[in-house]
Every structure is written in structure tokens, then in C-alpha cells.
Length: 477
Image: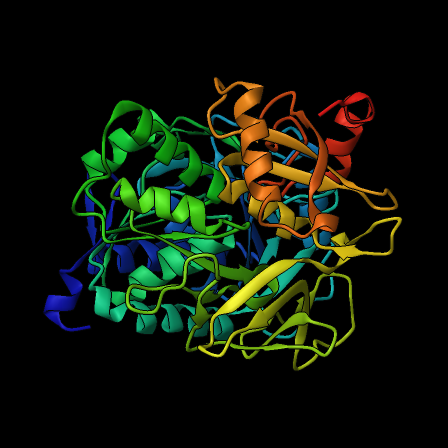
């Protein structure tokens, strides 16, 4: 690094700024600690912070595997991840008790933390594994996806290349760093680009747990912290846009780019958000592809699609209509010795149009077959309902003569008549076999805390159906 690069501000914690030189010093210091203690696999259970950034980069420097754990994981999920990865060390706040092993006080980037040494035995993992990310928690035993540093760098570089025309200089990290999308497309890409990453505790951004989100607090933080770019989940965008519309406000003028991913977004939400000054663009990716694979961008944008393939990725559609990706793939799964194929089958159905835009049509395993023999992707119908103004929808009907749905309004105060109007509008654009014949209002919003969604917003269909089966059977809608 030359002198000007060393003096570049790369991190801002809302109170202090860190130059590239200061970050390098902190990383070197903690890497030396990890080497001295012989750490093989470092697990972290930390909020977004400069300390997280330093620990992540220090683990790579020291040749240790990093296992970032989401703070919203249950105790059982944390225990599973630690054992499955063979983690020998856990870095966590001093204020969090860890009864399973003694924890020694330590300091990382000036933050008081604790290191607990664990008794887990080493486990086999693919050669070159540098990071293990655990899927968002659809079960108590989420999968461990093993990634190599070269793959992470390739994806980060692809994001930097694609977004170069936007001249992003300041990125606000909104999602937990344990979520691969923020870790790679947000943090890593920004640091590679020489941009400033704004890293503050998630509670300051209106986030609580995996799915609690206060859009008023979030909007105030965006105004105060002045980012050029952020990454959001669809439900966060939906709530922020709803708050701005209800309070007759707009997003700050300086906000240049808002990437949205993790679950389907829909053209309607994108257009409503843009009308409020939120420059929202949908993308598509998966942990097995080291996060983002396709992205809409200014000048290359088709609302309702997942965008064009990014420079680091390759995407094709199989003969069965399944999206397959290549080039930036996982090294393998923990506990699974099977080699990774050149083309990874994502489980998502989709198509590539003549202009190269990817259209995601739902999960292959979610396909509903009605009693009339019609195959229907529930995500297709759910997207139509959201386009028509429904906040969230989950569609059922496997083996039934007609489809049914559990609906949650964009605004909780909206009456059932407004939901019915949205259903009618969606049905008018759908073929008869894909129309909603009966529906019920959800008991509450779909989120991870109530067990009805994963951390990234994907609905837990079985749980939603079980909670509303009696109401659906009695529905007169």
C-alpha cells in the first residue's frame, strides 16, 4: 500500500474512523494472537462491529477457518454449528455467559471480548476451506457451506467491477455479517473497492433479532449516517417504503443504490420504493455460490427479474427448467465427501430471457400439483399477489382442486376488503388454474421469531399451513 492508500478511511463505527493502516495493524495483532494459541477453527458470535471485521481478516491471515455464527441462532443451532465445524475457539462478548467452557478476557480492535477454548475434535473439511457459513436456519441443524478465500475474493471482485460506474464511496452494513450477502457483497467488496464501510451495532439500525425491524429508527439512521449504498431483505424494504409513504417522507437524496435479495421482491414493491426515492434493485444468489450471482443495475434493469449475470458467475437453465450456477462455487458441505459438480443445481426454477435477465420462478420442491393435474409454482402466484398490493402471501393447494393462500397486508391496519381487492386484481392476471379461490388473513407477520420464516425472509410453508389449516378449511373467501 502507498501512503495515500494507507490513510484511506475504510471503516466508520459511527464514533471513530479507521484508516487502512489502522485496520492492518489490528488485523496483524489479532492474527498473532490466533497463531500463538494454535487456533484452527475460530467461531465468532458477535454483533456487527469493527472487531468482527478484524477477527474475520485475522483468521484468514493466521490460516484459521472462520465460522461466523448469527447471533439470532438458537442455543441448539449454535451447539450444532460448533460441533459440526470442529471449532476449537469461540469469540464472543464478555457480557454473554458461556457455561460450556472457560472464557478468557481479550481485546480485539479495542473492543472488550472473551475467547472460550472448546473441546471439539477436528473434523474433515474440503481442502482450502477458509470460511464456513451456515444456512439461514430452516432446521435446528443448518448445513455448513465451506468456502475458499479465492472464491470469496472472486465474488467480491465481480461485485466491484459491476458497480464501478456507480462510484460508491460509503456503504452502510445493515445485515448481520454472519449473513453471507453482507459479508461478501457488502463488507468485502467495499473494502476491496477502497470504500468506507459504516459498521454500527444492528440495534442502532432498528434491527432486533433475526426479524424485528423498526423502519422509523432505520430511516433516522440512514439520514444520520449518509450511505451511498445499502443491502436489504425484501421485508425490510417493504416496511421502510410503507413507513415513508405513511409519514410522507422520502429516502435521502444521497442514497445511490439499494440492493435487495434473499427472497423474491417483485416489480410492484420496487416501483413503489423508487417512487419514494429508494433506488432499489433486485439480485439473486445463494450461499453455495458465495452469495450474489445476478443483479439489476442502473442502465441494466428489468424490475421483476433478478438481473443479469455478474462478472464472476456463470448461470444456465437445465432441460428441466432449473437454475444452475458455476464458477464461484462452494468447496463442499461439512460432513459430505461428495465432490462439487462443475454446475451446481440451485433447486430454483427460472429462465434467461433474450437480453440476459434471469427470471426466478420458484423452488422446484415447492411445485403444487392440483387435483386437475396442473403444475403451479406457488412463488409465481405469490408474486402476483404482492404485485397487486398484498404485503406477504403463501400459497397452498397440492392435491386440491383450487389454490388457497394465507395473506398479510402491506399495512396491518388495512381491512379484509382491501386484501380481497388485491386478490381479485391478481386473479384477473392469472390463468384460472392459478387463481386464489379462498384465503385467510395471517395471524401475524411472517418472521423467524414466530417460526414462520427463515432469517432471510423465506416462508416456512409447513409451519404457516399448520398454524392456519383450520381457518383455511373454514374460509368462505
